Amino acid sequence: MASVIVMVSVASGAGQAIEARIKALGTNLLVISPGSYTSGGRRAGEGTATALSESDLAVIRRFRASRRSRA
Image (tube, rainbow, N blue to C red; front, side, top):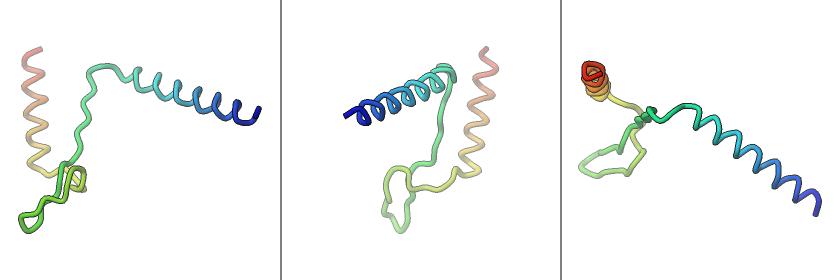
């Protein structure tokens, strides 16, 4: 019984540490990941694309530039 209590306490402490590190990143963090892969007209589903494309990068750069010009 004591070992279960210790394990739960360790897991809880680790979860709190991870949450604190995420909060420390701030509120202006945007995570961008590739969407779905399409082959032969069939969509494979969310998260199946392995990388962002050059055109994705161009859009991100234009977005960043427009945000900077507004500040």
